Amino acid sequence: MFTEVVLGENYIEKGEDLVAGELIIQAGTILDSENIGTLAAVGLTTLTVLKKIRVGLIATGSELLSPGERLTAGKLYNSTVYTLASYIERYNGTIVFQEKCPDDPICFSQILKQYAGKFDVVLTTGGVSIGDKDFLPQGIKVLGAEEIFHFIKMKPGTPVMASRWQDTIILSLSGNPFASLMNFHLFYWPLLAYFFQNKQFLLKEYDAEIASGYRKKSKLTCYIRAKLNNGKVTLPAKKKHLATGSYDCIVVQPENKKLEPNCFVKTYLLP
Image (cartoon, rainbow, N blue to C red; front, top):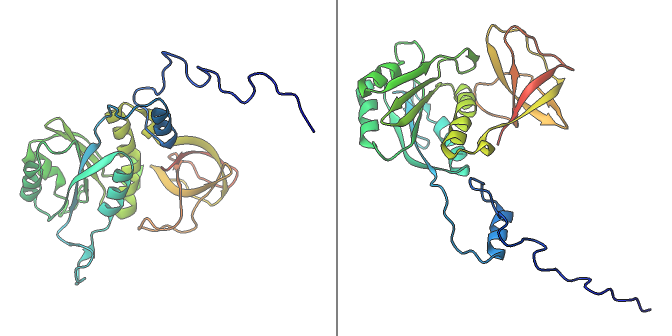
């Protein structure tokens, strides 16, 4: 059986994909697999890109041990910074140093001065509340840094603190593993978006319906890890201090408002 051949069929015309002078990729775009293929298709071999954000990590607390060390009475493993480092390195960041610091403001100041000029932002965990061992506010003063804010009406992670030192930012997160991750998600991604001048780094926001789960009223705005599925969220049945379990979003519970099935809530989808 024969069919008629149409003139020009199965041919790609000049300029069909791109025409002369057309913008290929907008400045500030995060390069993905498709973008890289497009650049190769037009013959580009090099490209000017922004440098990765340089991040320092300091876990504070004389009780901290490194994984692999023998666990003794009164000690616990330093875990949170490994989660933070993984997030940072997956999303346009590089870890320039990772240190443990005892409950000593002088030692904290010395670590920062040791790496001065080598980082854009420093994340610390622990030492930011009001207990006898919470030395970070004093450490910031010893360093000569300027405190931007300390304590936010949020739960968990109320004592989060931010400071400015030598044109860099020190973001001090709660010492509780789960609270520190909430602080990280709510403050680090906007910081990254500002650094790269790219809103693609911000967490995606949705209005989602609660499928199951309940939370009583709170005097503070609460941030709850949850699972998003087909536009509905499931709240965990039990609270855990460690960031364990499968969850992919954060639900915002406004102050003095209970959460229950069929309510609609602001939800942030994690990277």
